[in-house]
Image (cartoon, rainbow, N blue to C red):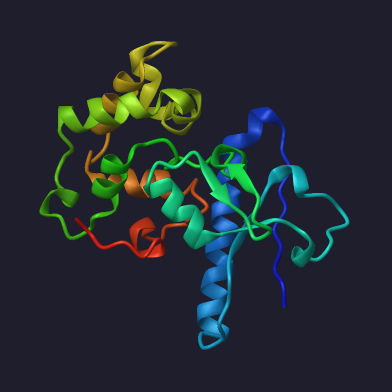
Length: 200
C-alpha cells in the first residue's frame, strides 16, 4: 500500500502549505502507529519537479529516504543521493524546510533533548549564531515568525526576528522546536534519531 501526498500552492501560500504538509505527515504516522504498528514501512520525499498528476508508481521515481535526508540536513550537506543513484541539491528536495541551512552545531543543540539547557531561555550567542545560518532562507523565517516581528519594523534583521520571538514567548530551544516542527517534513520527530545519530 502506498500513501502519496502531493500539495500545490501559490507563492504567497507557501507557509500555509508547509504547515499543512507537516500536519498530514503527522496524521499518517499516527494512523500507522494506531492501526498497523507492527507493519514495516518506508518514508520518502520526491523532487517537486517529478510530482505530477496522475501519479505513477513511486518505483518509477527518484526517491529520497527520510533517513538519508535527515543525515544530510544534520551534516549540512548540499546534496542528497536518491534511489536511482542520482545526486540532487538538498534545497530542491526541501523547498520549505526550516531546519535546512541552520548549521550542524545549531541543529544538534535544537534536537539534543537530554541537554539541561534544552528547556532554558536561549542565549544571545545562540540567537546570533542561528541568525548567521538563516540568511539563505531569511524571508521564510520572517514569514514563520511574522506575528512576533511586527514590533521590530517592516524590514527586520534575522537576529531581530529571533530576539523578538524569544522575548514574546518562552524563548527556549524546546519552544523553538515546537515553532519550527509545524513546518517541517520531519513532523515533530527528533531529527538526530531519524538520522541514527547519538546526542552530543
